Image (tube, rainbow, N blue to C red; front, side, top):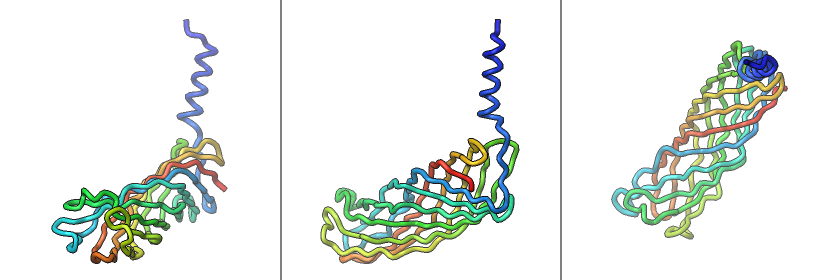
Length: 213
């Protein structure tokens, strides 16, 4: 026989987890989210002629502390800002120089501003999408391994960004969530062995806990 007390408790827990009343967004709300951020480059450089046919480089992925802010202009339209503690990427040889391994290192910071559309609905899950502009600042570039001591300079980059995210409201103030970005980062590297274009074009992930002011 079903224990009615246990059944009632189970129903209450299920309702709390999956049928919580939506904490609707309102104009003037400010959401602050903090958590783990990962940057996964999807592109590679153009050919480095001085190093031979099909000599290229590619940036490795990196993780850091990330944050995002959303300020609601209306109940559905917000302005989002993505920030982070700087990311440090190893640069690996590819193609004909893949055997060289790690040939350089660079630090970057990619602040991104987006205009977001937030979908209010009848659940505690709040999805949103956005599009906007990214500026990536590169510094502390240095040659390593086979290119140790080689001068490296990477130009800063402006490009577009696309965003999708999902918040889960724990209550009317606290939330957890995830965001994913595609960021257009196209830059030019200047080195002692030649200059070449680099398409970084990363997918960035953000897993956060947040608070609504």
